[in-house]
Length: 230
Image 1 (tube, rainbow, N blue to C red):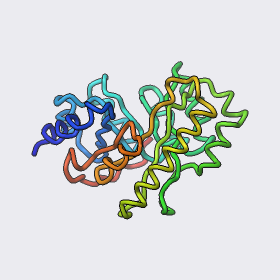
Image 2: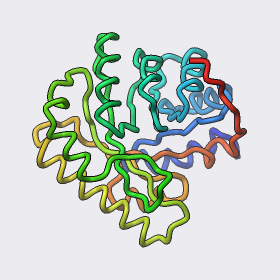
Image 3: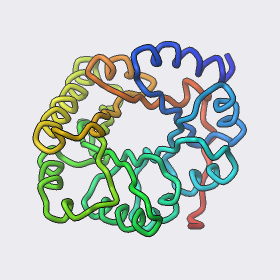
Image 4: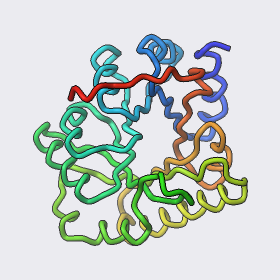
């Protein structure tokens, strides 16, 4: 099946239930992204800043770009002018830098707090207590050019269905608690980004509002090694 066919299969499933599809275009050529764009997709997720900057320069300007990979503070300035959503905020230090660069660009940048839910040492993210501590801090209260619109989490790789389900449920429970405690009157705090190709249906059952699908849309990735040019 073509990229367009794969994409339409997901959109026909997700659009009626108002779950946003993030087409993960990491390591894909700009032409592949354009094919998905021409099939109606407007939201794309990238993991690597260099690759994201390269594609943003080449592709239509109405694309909504999401940064979904680990973000180093020294790379924020390169995406601050155009990024729609940074899904991977995992520290107050990073959030402070995003705020600084957003201010320089005279904009407010939407962010998700990445929460550590997996039973693995290789994943990034804030612990539950750390997320609460961040939101309670005086430093966070002073950040006027970032807006926390929800949370993101990545489940354990190759886990049993029950474990994956439990991890997603834990994130939903945390989201509900944060909403009640910190964002009760904030309509914008509404996003739970969880679920990928292998587990997105479980994620939706547990309340996901956006899912990240890559290889099932674009096919197998061709791994590239982006030089640290930025």
